Length: 517
Image (cartoon, rainbow, N blue to C red; front, side, top):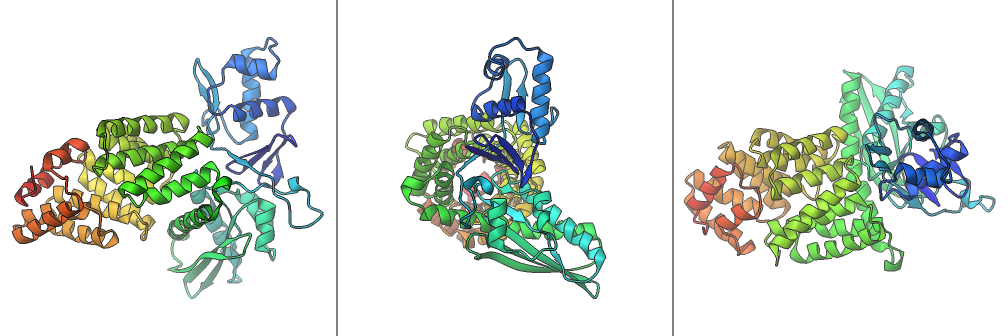
């Protein structure tokens, strides 16, 4: 079996640990310790468990155990302070908390290649960022190009759902004419990002292209031209542009792959991707199908934190959209699955962001939710999903200015994201609470264009128009909203979530628009 986590490959059959294409030296006992922790990653392993498994029950001092654990952490780039992979739970034991992929062996394309001679391809999306070519003939640009690659690699690595090859491995191809298919095979990745940098007349042009390694198909390509002023600011700006463009494209490609696979071949991750595709449609039927798929994923992989978080999201949407036959059950399930996701991986920024918004909408413990949302942004500041969730948390907490800043940041991350209508609606709600009614209407119109069947924009229209004294437009918006959500009443809206907390002006506008009490 090969276990993959971040840039590491842990091969229990060959008893090898690799970081990218580089072998990591590790003693047999430390290897056994790592293997036991990884195989039992769904639970907390006690000191007695480790002694029984690794030392066959012999008496072992705490110092000896600590030494082996530190050696295991060193081998995989972890530390006792960071505990990125191996977490110590005081008085309970230890747990491997890194996101692990179990990969199948793949044979090389040449007859002489042994199945284990190249890294296995993970089920999840995997990417290598190759060194950008310096096309300007200026040696100083070499540093800029290399720094650009390092920034992009780091930004992509913050998405825990991506398997990103470390810079050191990617840079073994620097200065060489490369065959993308060979790069994908040697590094064990599905996608390769290539780029080039050219400087001329005080400007720098960066081109980039995302390629599916196995087929050579181009998933995305773009160019960026900027003034050559502050190099570091320029690197940050281009990194943001590249990452926000390729991350959604990459997952669209992954979802397309998952939908083409036969049902009997589906992995937990494939099922998760299919569920995600259904969940974003947000209809009664699509949410039911998303829950069916994601629960199948959890049956295959009970430790799949992202799947648990997605299931919690679906139950929350059923409550918020009045789809629930038993709202109390759906509410309890959403909270239960949120807590399960956090217990499985409380260091994953996407899980933290989802948990923060579920808790904000259904529980309303603002201090805890703000802390989780802020921690998620600190762990990955390059995600639309995380900034959007943070916006809703701050809106519910009664901080509309900070909510608007988060929604704006989300849309800058991913201007064409399928969930943009949600961020725009949240912005409209926040603008109403700031008495910026005209701006709220503008935001709602944009949301309506993205998703004309979503009731949120019409709620903004009804309230904002009513506050502006545009009564006919307010009543028209209220009527349209009731066509989409016929069960809507002001009291039910207040009762089903915490959205209405600090939403006095929103509710006042509803009443002026004539919406049912």
